Length: 381
Image 1 (tube, one colour):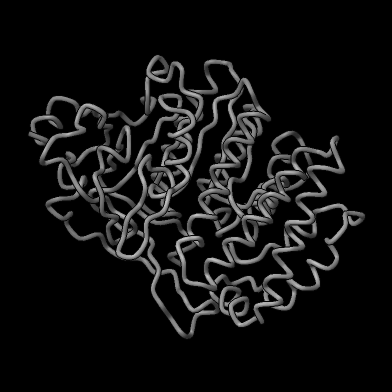
Image 2 (cartoon, rainbow, N blue to C red):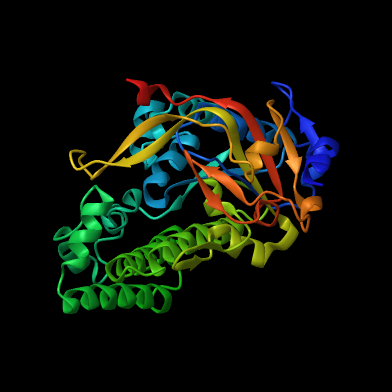
């Protein structure tokens, strides 16, 4: 059944053809275009094509990336005409090393000329440290100096080190941190009615960062849930801050799916689940994946600075139950909404060189298949 569905509904894409006809996006406020791995040039170029087609219709467009919100203010200011070189802005303003990719720098250069705005979606410091947010907050705010002092005792630029050091704190110290974040949030909400909404959202992300840390310390689903809630809340914030704009999200496929993620011992709502619940059909979830090629991946490595190294792997032929096995070996898109309920619909999608389990047609509205992928140049050097 599903094979016949793909034959009838797969739409090949030429090199320059828009990912979607603009009529297909009527009524859509948020287009989430994912990727099976970060630092893949072909995926960045697809997002760039989508942004170009949306910008061509003349309405405001905001590009929001799975990258730190606080750091992203530098990118936003640069796109609005601020000073600086794109390489330096990308390196400092995009977390998770997203700015090292030449294709991302090219996209930012184009966005500056096209009037496309930018926002980071994510917790600060590559989800390793809240200090970039704390150091942006006005010095006269209460509790900020204490929060910085307490945070400097455990925060590292490497996430695993931060989580281990936080878990080693006395319970009273962890509770004190949570109490100070709660007090700062309450103060910002109650005492400062005219507070800059950007600053107010940074405070909220700080609270969610603290909740993520508590989840890691207790090995609970709260760790992943808090981060994905942060991604979703940033989108809700953007919809209010840019009420007339179309928001294009760039993030890993798993963050964008419309359904909960279930793995042994864990069930969590990704950002896309929150977005779909509130926005309905105004949210379009697009998975992007590769049939073949190479992919960045992560491997445990005691000798790596953060205990994890980034490696490059060749993709093996897709599993028979994976969406990649059903896709033709050519660039194109497949609308999955008509495949929901088919008994033989795929039950896995690539994540780097492994798979995320679950009904793919329920999780995404559309999948874009790339015949073969490469990896960013900086990973090859």
